[in-house]
Amino acid sequence: MQNTKHSYYKIFKPYGVVSQFTTNDKHAKNKTFLGALGNFPEGTMAIGRLDEPSEGLLLLTTNGAYSYHINNSGIEKEYYAQVDGLITAPEILKLQEGVYITSDNKPFLTKACKVSLLSSAPTLPKRAKKIRDDRHGPTSWISITITQGKFRQVRKMTSAVGFPTLRLVRVRIGEHTIGNMQPAEVAQLEVVF
Image (cartoon, rainbow, N blue to C red):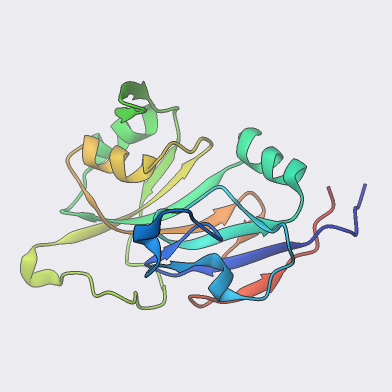
């Protein structure tokens, strides 16, 4: 059933933007929040989060039930991760099968997921802050698709197999993709829910 009173958006969250609209943290007053990216209706919320250094697709809505559905229904979230070093098949297999990370100060085994090595760097907009270059050693890109979302999960997963993430870009949430969007770009969505 379509509910026309709610609003839905997708945005390309840029590097350095906080995935919330406001904060009570007095130390965060110099940070950029989602509200700076557009004129959103009252009650708009981010569906899930991306940490400040992460980029890419973020969905926004005024519909709390839709937000809950996306966050709790095992919907796939795909990321492109640039990792430090040349990742190999054994590490990719470990990531696919699940690795132990720390969540809420406790060991947590990630669910099995889809991971593949990208044959070349994906076509993405330049990041606001430069990433180190090849003089500091080789890097590789992987696609990783998860259905859960613990705090900094993908970064913790790649570190757990010895390949820290240098750049992380979410490119898909379920059927919604980032396509050719540019950082800070906002697009209204038609959602049937």
